[in-house]
Amino acid sequence: MQDKFKSSTVYQIYIKSFCDSNGDGIGDINGIRSKLPYIKSLGVKYIWVTPLFCSPMADNGYDVSDYRNINPMFGTMEDCEKMLSEADELGIGFMFDMVFNHTSDEHEWFRKALAGDPKYMDYYIFRDNPPEWSSVFGGSAWEFVPSLGKYYLHLFDPKQPDLNWDNPAVREELKDVVRFWKGKGVKGFRFDVLNLTSKPANLESLPSGAGASFCKDGPHIHEYIRELAEDSGITDMITVGEMSSTTLENCIRYSSPESHELSMCFNFHHLKVDYKDGGKWTLMPPDLNELRRIFSQWQEGMSKAGSWQALFWCNHDQPRIVSRFGDEGEYWKESAKMLATFVHLLRGTPYIYQGEELGMTNAHFTDISQYQDVESLNYYRIMRENGTSEADAIAVLGAKSRDNARTPMQWTSGHEAGFTAGKSWLSVTGNYTDINAEAEESDPDSILNYYRQLVQLRKDYAVISDGDVRFIETGNEKVIGYERRLNGERLVVLCNFSGNDEKVTGVDVKGKVLIGNYSGTHRMMKPYEVLAILEG
Ligand code: GLC
Ligand code: CA
Image (tube, rainbow, N blue to C red):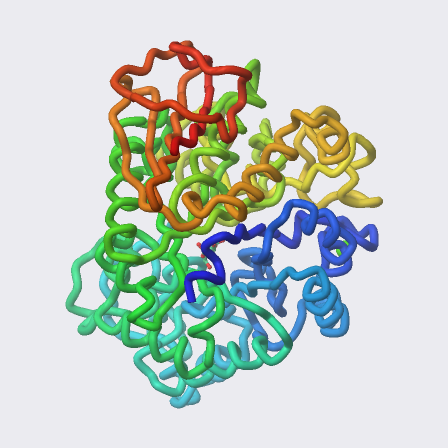
């Protein structure tokens, strides 16, 4: 089963910002269809597309009001079917995004619940005296409904009420949704915040705190995931669960071939190494020792257990990696390539988030009016209420906001970066005249062409797709190194995470350079240099 995705790479599309076909400023299905040849040219096997279902878009589609219909903003069911079959002809499978922890408050189940229908009230989590929990997006996780005299749980926005997975009828409904899309020819699934779905028993007796922290990896989670996968017939498809603040032990089990749960998991520990005291809305340079420690623990732990990781730096919730752990200036190209190589040669399935393959940067918005993301707007308000200055709040958003990843895909140097003939729903990043697909297509040394090489290497070298992994000492905390081994072959990867020359000691390796971002090998690693050397 793992053979399906061991040598594959996945491309993630954030539909609203990918390509607009009709000039309304919003990316859509026909826009995706027009770019399938581009995606094919990257060599990827799967496309994960963010939710395109009916939604009031309070959280850009992660608030679904109808799981079986297409949001008219994105197109029609007919467009969707064409998209699936055209991708199929190119040998690319779509993975759809199942948002099953919660629905929209405009979903008919929740409307019926609000009207007091007991059957549907039991689809959600209503309580009389809930604990004081905060939501992920800021503010309380409980919303009072005066007509019912009860509160409902929403770990995210009030417009995203949490489903009650302990109700078997809810689990049946969700399996039906999976079967529906499988029947349409979808080849895999991504499950949104899946490990938050099994809620703790005796909710009302729990202390105050962050709601999500009480709900992660809950009491029935393995049982529920296995049931969902087996009953909806997707155990042999590619599936990935988004796991919030999870543990290695749980992810080993979620993605073990024996447990019939998922193909792989996203976990986020490596993307918190620049959170000061664990807080997202802070500014701190990445702690490279911590980054190395986390990757070695997870990579080696998953490898020993035969489980599988999803490898990624970027998605629609994360700031752009080149701005975050790399360099937007002098070493823009070198650092983007180094960061790409670091994840693509690890053990697992790499995900490329739209625009990452171009080295797209953060948005550099200067005014709060440019932001649209619900989480960013909430935290801007909270920071201001807590006395943070306007300038400091904008600086934090500039580094941390999810909108950094959501600016339109930069296709050309023309109008709105070639994303739309109209006006984009979210401002284009100013550097699109330099950073765009058209320019990189014609440059053999571009970041885009480098990503194509990485995707191909995973197909060509079993040591990359199948080898064991072990992190190695480099004698320098700025240089993270690891080796992959298979059948007497050894691949050594050295990554300089700093903008200076760095010395490496104690690494003994001779062989051919499989890929790198400078020519030749040196005793000193150049700024953001990466080298992958194959022995044997
Ligand atoms: C996931 C999604 C994110 C969304 C949240 C709530 O983390 O990736 O975009 O806001 O879940 O559905
Ligand atoms: Ca459109």
